[in-house]
Amino acid sequence: MARDKTPLPVQAYIFILFVLCGLAGFGSCASSGAKNGEDRLFAYLTDTSRYILLPPGGIERPIDMAQYISASFRGSDFLFASWVKADETAVEITLLNEMGTGMGELSYSGGSIAFSSAVFPASVKPEYIIADFQLCFYSVPLLARALKDCGLTLEASETTRRILKGKNLVYEIEKKAGEVKLTNYLRGYSYTLEGDFS
Image (cartoon, rainbow, N blue to C red; front, side):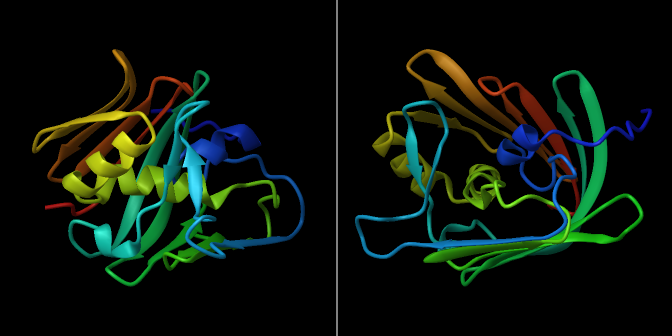
């Protein structure tokens, strides 16, 4: 697959798991936190579906690995990498470009998210990155309850997760031993994560 060297648009990164974003700005640091039970961290999975982020303890199994990502957004393809460490206490993601240079770090502890980068703008919303991560790697029963609370339905098997708004398919996640592919039909993006997911 030919590698597109075009800078990525900011809108893409907001929805795509790790690093789809335009290279804008020279330094940024963003953090957010839940102040109380009524002000929890969330992401809109549809225009009206407010998904409350699950705590780190909802992950199916701990992850500590490099992940290679091929993504498609509005007809363009991109390749990049990250190192992901996630367990019952936190999710930590280090973003890397194709040359292996660090592009930013994201940390989610449940009550707060911190995202810092020398290249990505402060408008990047890390809640959306964590939401996609949870849809891929969190416990099906926990996800089903959280999605039901925001008006969505989860259909899941060992290899596939489908998230619907009524009869409309919003997300589809296909899982294999060395690959996880997420497609967001509503926002028009998809990406494939390669790693040791066995």
